[in-house]
Each structure stands twice: as C-alpha cells, then as structure tokens.
Length: 267
Image 1 (cartoon, rainbow, N blue to C red):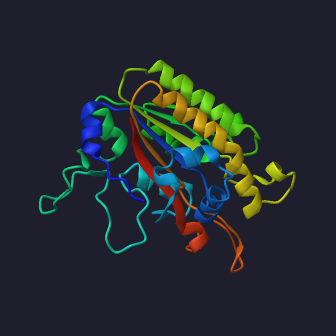
Image 2: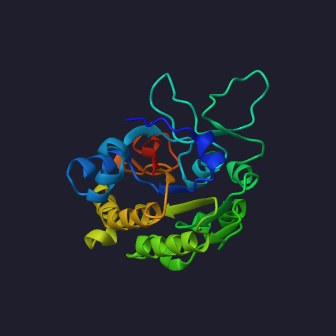
C-alpha cells in the first residue's frame, strides 16, 4: 500500500521527520514476521498494516545510505513510480511533482538545514561509529551524531539503547523542526544470539526484528504523542544466508536487493 505524502508541505510546516533504517533486514523476513503476528507493534503502525516490497539503491550500508541522504529512497518494483518525497534541484527541463520537496543543496540534510531543520543521527552499525575514517563519512553529513558500542549489533539490547537516545534527542529539540535518523543495528549480523546461536540465519534475523518491534513502537508512540511526525521506515539492503549459494551483502541478489519500506504522516 503506497501512501501519498506531500513532502513539500511537511517541510514548509516544519513537521519533524523520523527516518529509521532496519539494517540488513530482508523483505521476506519482515513480511513473514508481520503476517505471522510476530511484530505486533509494527502491524499497528504501518499503513494498511503491511510493508511495501521495494528495491534498494545500494547493496550494503554505505552506498544505500548515501543514496537515501541524496534523496533516493527504495523504488517500487514496477515500471511506474510514485512521486519522490524529495530530490535535489533538477535541471530546468525536468518537471517535478508539486508534492516533492526540492532542495537546493548537494544532499537532503543540507537542504533541510536551509529550511530550519536540525539533523541528528543515532547510529547503529560501525559505518556510523567514527571508529575508522570510513565510519565518519555518514555521521559527518549531520549537525549532530550519536554512537556508542551498546548501539551496535553485538549488544543484545541495542535497540533499547538507541531508542532511549533518540527520545532524549527529541526531548532536547521539542518544538523545533527535527530530522531524526536511527539506524537500527539489531537486524544486522551478528544476530544469532537472539536464538542462542553462534551463526546468523533467516530465523535469527527474524528474532532480532521481533526483539526490536516493541522498542520501535515505543519510539513512535512517544514521538507522535507530542504532535505530527513524518515517519519513514525501511531496510537499507538485505542479507543472503545461503540463498542460491550466496552469503552476505554487497551482491546483486533478490535477498539483498528486495527490502521492506513504509512511509506515513502520523498526525
């Protein structure tokens, strides 16, 4: 189910934006967990109670997020696409839907800043950790970024810690235009520990998502209790666990390229 959102109106009104990426979450894992009643909070929150099946612009964390922050969210697997939520100012010959927020900047975060938004990152996987030079590329795009080891996937309560941090950020900037980004690491390897295993599988990724479900519900409930928010939630890519002999990410395989997506204006 595609929800039509006038992103231009959202930005003009200064409505806060929550963007959540469920790192490495496969579409089939998300859809099956939802259909089986295992992710009850997401079932209550997602438009129509379901995930959209989409294709990611990147096959691992770095390129996918660089695309997202440049205005390219996952695409529908259909010839015709709905209007984009936002995009960089295009050449003069290109027509843009009036509901698309057009930013005159090299990336969305700078474009939002020009409209009075504070952009804040609550990192998860190590691409947001600043532990390495490459781990600073994505955080450097934001006005403010937060990462601690307990936000990363080896920590069994990573999502709880991340949501606590995100809510603290929202409290600090209450009443101001805010772009709040959370990279949920629980669904990224390693997640075998959610089943007491040393290996990562489709089943353990599902268990990680089931764990994260309540905390994601808590995050959105507490944010939207204060007023309207635009919420966007998707995976950056999937992960192969032996599908057709493939393992991991960074490969063009349906298990990696097909992701869950949802967006809605929660008023």
